[in-house]
Image (cartoon, rainbow, N blue to C red):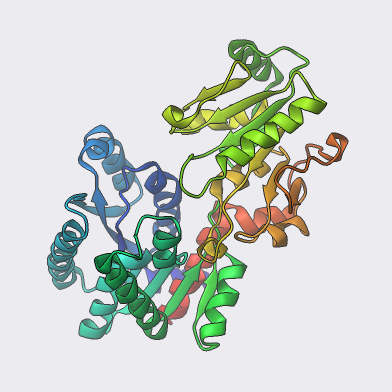
Length: 398
């Protein structure tokens, strides 16, 4: 089909995007809005319903409203309720149902695109009631992740019931979805063992390569930042970028750093995290929380990065955005095995090293900075992710 005619046809199609994560959350700004802006530019009329935390909404709503207006996105924010547990979520779902019914009467959606399991409850309902094409963007194995991460106590009868409920709904989502999106090849393999008939596409968390571009960082900027951080010319910098908590093997990463110090005594551990209060270190730790636009420069002053994640069934579905951002900057990454697609990456990506033993430190001359190749860009670039979503939309609308 002619591209112009195809885009004209798609411009007549209304898409409803549902997210229980807020657009004013950092995740919403990095992993939701850029994709939807790209799809909007291809002619889709997208309405977003998201749940916003009051403090984040107050701080960032004006910026997000402007971004949506500039990218022809229609945003319908709802208030996220955190407590009491379970009942607050049920209340939010009732508010969502009321909102999407109203919006569908006004806009007659052709597709409902649901991010993760909570909103998929409404997506499946919309499909059954109005015959709207339903995309289950499952992200990962959410119910299993809640149990394995200790967020749902399986010994508690209420949480045991909730887990069982969502595992049954998971099966229904997969059976009735017109398209299923997962983040990893490992997750796709698991889902297809349940049924080879599921329509599964892999779209990993992507990276804005215009922002994470090592060619845009000047040597003078690196020197100035190293001076600001108190780093000498001889200091070897290990980087950790991201959250610290349930799934991240923080103690093992600290042990890795201590092993590194035995080989390079002048090593420093640069930790860029929003969870500064969870880090206890000494004079060799530099712990900061920096704005997203500053992250590439901070990555550029590091020699090596570490990313250890607790292996489990649910983490087969995890795609570490931060790891891809570091790789995009040409900095080598050391990871443990047993989660996501790290073994797949080890065999195909430059600068990716996977260790079976988190205490193991291969010879440091094995690590070298290299810019990524076309394979990396095809896998992780934002443009590639938008193209894959566009292909899913086009297939459903054809």
